[in-house]
Length: 489
Image 1 (cartoon, rainbow, N blue to C red):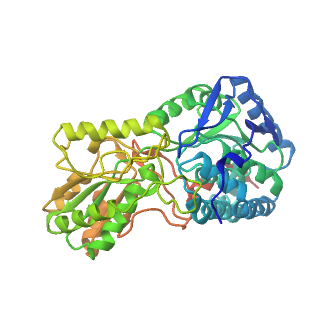
Image 2: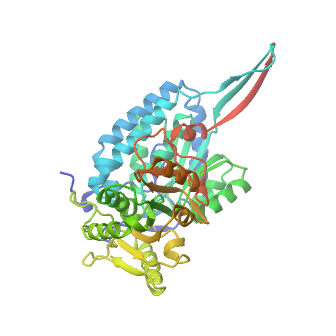
Image 3: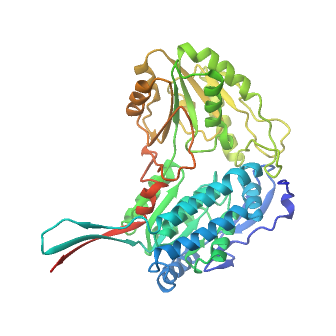
């Protein structure tokens, strides 16, 4: 039985610093439940002084605890114990589903296992990747020696709080760093519980700290702190640009940025069975209510398959039913808040006023109170310069554009700002590889759409979709700096 009463869940208090819960002294922030709009609790924002305390303690802890210098397999053992606790913690599942857009069924069956496996993957990396001995003169020895940065600042978004935290903490901790993490102020609770479980697993106190607050105060103080040696951020392109600038002006810190997307789903006539392809397309833009940076929100379909595929999508869009996230029978996510719902409404209305046709959805589900559940929406005849085509909507809205020739489809798939992901659907391997080469994106999925549990495959965008990689060994190596050594003997 996964269903639970949200009013009976004990919420973590405030921040988590040096292994202890702490109350802040800054502005008061209300936290609302996305499913019904009711107030879940209140946060006191971490002031710059509290951020300074958290970072300073993290810097001390990573040095004095021996976390940075202990045998890598010892770090891996702690991370593996942490993963076991994550996978089985009922309260963690409830905090995630109560305070975010993630239905409890998805949290228990997908989010917790995915988060735990990400931590296990980096536990295995701890002693698998090292430096190099480099060829040089006979009487010399050249080496490239990796070492942790010290304290890494991490900022995570509200759409997948737990898994995004694992992407930041897993590689950073496995490489011997400390982490000070700021979750979104909209979804603060599950990340604190995650940190509590890390201490229970044996992570030294102070090596992982959680500070709560908005980007303008808490986030800015974290990025600018002189003891933060690297920054990892997932969120919007606009905020990512600001973080990159602040990091450069406050210590020339390296950054990893996974930012926005406006990903195409390029479907050719020879894509295969229409119902199967339609299911892929549907999941690509409705998962988590469309609130994913990788959402495939631009359907670019060849004319020969277009009518059948669109008809199938119209039918599938009518099968969704809203439900609060703490009900085990719920499968469809609400919008995170009223502001996000209004943004979706404005973009859909603007497209309609420009002449677009709404084939399905186009409005909120009725009877959901202050929970903002948006109907899966299909827009066709959308002008190429419409915000619905150009802007990241972060909602379950799919625009449809039809092409005849391969070159035309590839041209429509390009985007002037974003290059995060793309889907290519065809049974012709030559065409698939030409499309893969022709699309500017950090990830291209062929005859599928969405990430898998293969953590060895990194993710990251091109253009305005980001810099660097999360996941894979690339994320682990990015949490280390490399010292060149030359010895004469």
